[in-house]
Image (spheres, rainbow over the protein chains, first blue to last red):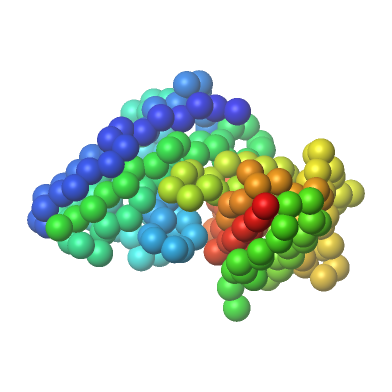
Length: 114
Length: 112
């Protein structure tokens, strides 16, 4: 399984600012994903990060709010833009390879917006 | 109807007990099924994949019933360290097979 790291592990931000979260995988992977997990809830997929092209967003998530980059097969970033307290959540990246659908997760970024 | 449904629990069991969780999924075209474990304030970790023939890994047994569209996880001889939330996960069909849909999780508390 891939080993995934995320930076920062946590942050406290003021409303109206933006935060970029980095996700690094220790090997090349086919697919990378970004999720949000709000307190007491399960994971919600934000988008699929596509290497070399625009991310594919799920319903309710838009590029202007959550721009995503994936410049190569091991790295991706998620930016949470113009933050409000409702964006306070844990943001997780995951990766999968080949034809298997198993995904492995990074440790998450705990974001608090004040 | 939710794509993946689980009893949120909590299931409170003593050490050594056997406990079973069920999960139902709505889309009969789903092909891949998993159980993930999530500890408090940690990321989900893959516990096991669920195969049509059923599979066992030590104290853990997973089974799939396609006709009834449910997945089960059986934990035998529960340990204190089994306390966690268990997430039932199914690959998305309408939104792309490589996307996963997560249930809300079943919380297990194992007590001494």
